[in-house]
Image (tube, rainbow, N blue to C red; front, side):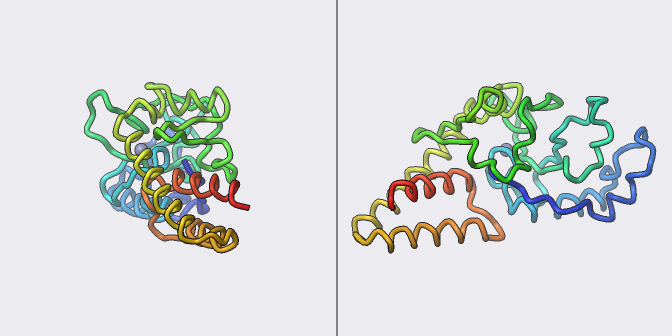
Length: 218
Ligand SMILES: [Zn+2]
């Protein structure tokens, strides 16, 4: 999970903010829905807001972070800040993200909006994602919430990112004994990843691994 820099509510959504809440959501209109998806896709740089797997502009789900079915959050159903794109899956037992969370509420604050999100999440070498507090860890693990470890391929994909990156970095370290040069290269790698218009799938894992190396190589 990485931070999503949310833009202000676009005009095509803002115009509906004074409409009564009992009318259907504006993005049920296909043109608005397409614009919204396109904006969210650009904002999230091509990744699912929760699991960070690759999504396409068309094939995804508009997710309400705070569930729209909960009366408490009714007024958030049209708030751009409460909307993200998540991945779409075929169903079955391997559900995660929106498909497992459904209308349930995450116990932890919506972490994807927090600048410090990366401080709260760790990754084991086997690809396990770990929340740094009990509530967050429950959000990530519960099969009724994000279920990011209960899904074999997500864990395997994260493990592959870790392994591949470690091979690249370790080879570089072997060839370049100069610590300053190694650090500079790692910082460059990190910078390029953060600045990219379309991120590498599981970008948070990649950033985590680079930052762990940066802690060691001083
Ligand atoms: Zn996902």
